[in-house]
Every structure is written in structure tokens, then in C-alpha cells.
Image 1 (cartoon, helix red, strand yellow):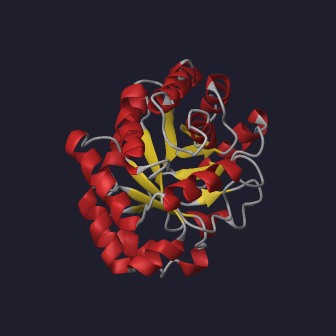
Image 2 (image 1 turned 90 degrees about the horizontal axis):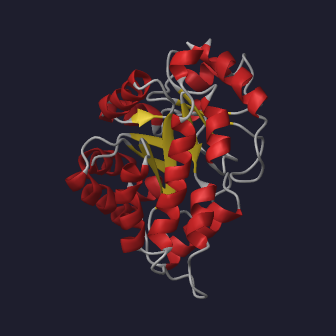
Length: 279
């Protein structure tokens, strides 16, 4: 079911390091530029690719990812085109896990059963759907697991030991720990507290625990990597891309390189921390 995800974490463990998980928005700022970025992420050092599904009301996302979603939607991005991008990626790369991240509304409109069938066929490995709590697992989580897709759940600083079992009950692939209370890209996490939180979650699950929200550079990535199985970076990559767009938000010759350069820095940060020494 989650072979690619499991294989990737096994590979990272064998190399004695944490995984680097990179997030970009499908279709931002346009279809072809987002594909070029996507296909170059693994070459730059990304272990897992999170692909954002643009939505008009992304309540968990900060200004950077909200703006990315709006740019993508303005360019005509939709669920069909997002799945097509995954298919194109899979023609070149059969090993890098792909996680679709977004909200339930576009999936519901597309049709849950149709979406799961098409996502699996396209080469998607897992889903992160931030607005479906465990109490609504019947809507998408359980059908996704049945279809062979990992359903990855978010835990936060406010997810206490009483709530954790419900959050983890049907989680597969890995657990995504949100290191700050609030929206994406809003603040820098307290790295000491993150390590303690990861240890607490690991007492409840054998799954890898990756940490995201607020990681902006290689030093941040290294600090998180000391205590986590993986580091997620999203808003910083979106910001790097945004900084290269022209006055009308069109891509320029620097757009792809700006993202991959930052991914290389993040990858070096993650790889600078030996998990073997800590073991």
C-alpha cells in the first residue's frame, strides 16, 4: 500500500539521516513551470514530494501558500491537471513518493471514488487532507486506505495524549507534526520543544514522524533533523519561487533554479545531521 513511502524512509535510515519532504503548489505559477520544479526536486535532494492541490479557501495556509494557490487557479489549474502532472512525473521517476496535500472540497466535487481511482492510477502514494478530522474517516480516510493510498494525519502542539490515539488510528505512511500553533510559514519553531514533541508522538506509533511549518533554511532543517525522521519545507520554497516572478506573476528564467537551489541547501542541512551518532 505505502511501499514507496516505506522504502524511502528505510533508505534514509540506512543512510543515517532524516528525510527531506518538499512542498510545492501544483500549477504555480503555471503548469509547465510547476512540472519543471517538480521533476527537479528529487535531483536537488528532495526525498518525498508534497504536491499542493489549489483551493480557494485554504484555511490552514499562510499568505505565501494562499497566494500560490490563487496564482495556480488563475492559470487554470484543477484536479485533473494536477493528476496529469503526477502521471508525467511518474514517466521519469518511479521511486520518489508523491503526497497530494489539500482540502476535501475539490476531492468531493471531483467524486471521492473517482478521485481515489485516478490518483492511484496516476502514481500518487498518499494524501494529506487538513480539514477532515478522525471523526470523519468514513468520508475519505478509510476509502483511501482501502484503495491503497496512505492517509497522513497532522498532529499539532495542542494534540494531547488523550487525543493522539484518535489522530493516529488510521494514519499510514508517516505522521506530520505541525511544529507551531497557527498557519504555514508564520513563525520559526522552538527546536527543543519539537524534539520533545516528536519523542512523545513516537511513544504512540511506530510510524516515522516528520516535522513542518516554519522551516526556512538549511540551518533550520538541520536543527529539526536532529529530533525527527523527516523535515517538511513548503512556504520557503514558495517564497523563493515568488521572488523570481515578474510584475504579472509570470515565471522567469530564474524560477526553477531559485527553488532547486534552496532545496539543495535544505538537503545539505538535513544530511549534515548523522542519525547514527544519535542512535
